[in-house]
Image 1 (cartoon, helix red, strand yellow):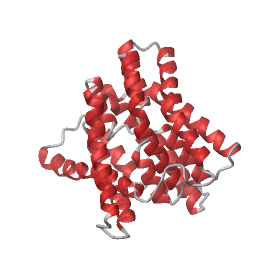
Image 2: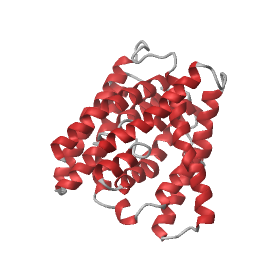
Image 3: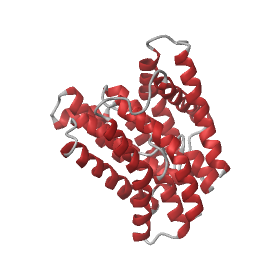
Length: 305
């Protein structure tokens, strides 16, 4: 249990610092968009490369991977159907909402939770792999097409392939799969930049909370409630069912359900900022799921631990 508290203490401090920065207007009116571009184009690629390059290949491609993929697919498709055909939302906003419901914070929360609650930080690696190399290219490709107006498959693929986060992820997996050992003179500078990503991302999120209240945007409260409920309640339940269907041992059932119970990834909010769509939806779901997942994680540990 101390692992859960440790992870959230670190995250909470960074968010509070960002909130204070915005409250006293320390960095001026352009701070949020500048920090958003800094994390998206510069720091995140370094972080993703370092995390995946250091991951164990056996863990990356273990049985945890298909279970996590199926679980995320069920939640994302479920939200997308409701958003498009019931709520009648635009494509780009549907993508942001779907990611808010089904993309977990497998990195800056998942890694410490995996380490302190499950005993090994590498348990979050399969989820990171799926989200970065499968889910993210699809989502960013759709967002690029929807926001740029392009419908050319070649242009969409080109834009997606140029995404720096995808490049960093692909190179990291390549290094891990090929068993390449990078010397400290190469890895240490990369890790230096990687270490800056999570604090800045979390502070940027904290800055966005200043002057804002949850569930205040007219006409979007139902979107936030649905995405939050799917993330906090339905996704862990689906992970448990899928894990049992795969006949996973009890310790691995605990792993996949714990990872599914993680809050929405902060980079969903980063994507919303980057593409100028669904920012309030992403912000509210990240906020609600970050607070709400704490009792959910405690419940998972008590029931399955």
